[in-house]
Image (cartoon, rainbow, N blue to C red; front, side):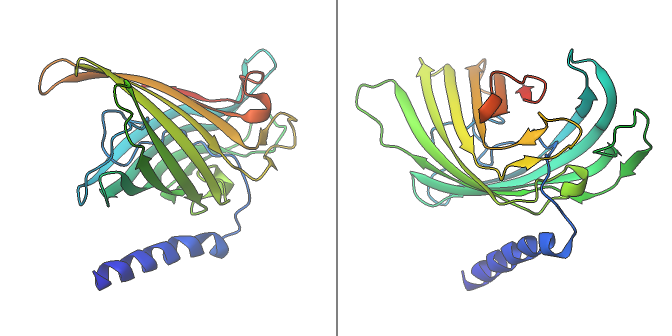
Length: 263
């Protein structure tokens, strides 16, 4: 146990010193795919059940994003790319400490990124093929709330923190400490269909990441998601998810900036 504690301390000290050794700056990030760490029924959405005491989950997920960030005109037509392609692997793990509390971590790693210069009014700029880059480390916990007798829904609270370990100069990290919290609400239909909704808030330091566009602002965000898990056989299930994160000040206004993921 003592060795485990030493490893955890060294692990966090290492990742926390990375930003101090670089010339990073606050920026937007193209890492939109954020898998949960506990291996539940969903991919990016949190269920309300926890890992049991001493139960654990480890894994990785690969992600490819096509044109996750680009310059567009007021009609949404493309002018040029900022990041046209990025291949990522998310490495994650979680452990249950009690039947109602768990903790997990996730670290995204970018293997290849097609990057173009940000903050340039030019319509044609050279492409950079970027190699291995770290993303922002996420630490999260989950607390399952006591079930209400004869009430069909379950609830869980998920506090989280992002650490500035990523390459923000190339939009693989934000270069800021970014805390937040989510609420998970879930229900089931005859132990065959599971439904879930997530609503969350994430705090960012307000950042204008492109001086050419007044709406290119990163600030506190509202996160919304919903999903369904349908059991087909003992070994097979169908999963559908939708997830969106948008700046609170213009969540329902600026759809050119607010990303949505569908799985």
